[in-house]
Length: 301
Image (tube, rainbow, N blue to C red; front, top):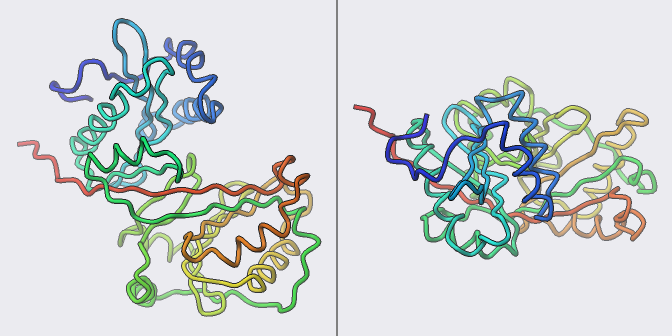
């Protein structure tokens, strides 16, 4: 439920808006992402909520509010109709979504955007978001890994102690953020609750003295790398994964690596990212800044 004082141009999406939204988002960035999120909303209506900015009976923008955890919200999929861009709509929309998060009693809200998207960088700065980390996401179809050569086999060591993980993050001054692909490219804070869930799910491991986490999302396997590895270490890792991956799997192996720690995997990516591999989307790389904002608890009294 939206507050009484919310900007009256912003409301919850209705199914009758589908054709209008698909029409104006068709030529915008990653247009397929919007119908995907709308389909996701059908299955998870309380978790991922589409809002529209409507003025003069014209829908000028859409944005999705995602409840990442009981404490955190996430903004994604904001698209503004071409002829209404650079008129302040995105900033107004973002501010209202912050207020919506506070209304729900959340303690944090986040979003991600590419390195080049200066308009979003400026909005985040003006609305007092903090820029946390710069990340690269690397995606590999297992088939492209078959020509890599492994020098050393290894065994992942499960990390079971909460205080050991907390010391690791603290000592290396690494943000407690976890990349997930539910429902899209998002990050969640590793709060105490999330950390306990990850430990109970056996999601933390040590590889060559550095911490990594792994999660399975359908046929995909996602690794968050909390440390620095060289080219040989990544090659060994990926070859062993390739050997263990189900044959003819349609899934992907995905790595989230802090840009500051990414030299080793960047070298490996360059070695296998042939024009043919890129054209077939066998390998992909994207770059992201993560922004976050701590919220005051909304007073309902």
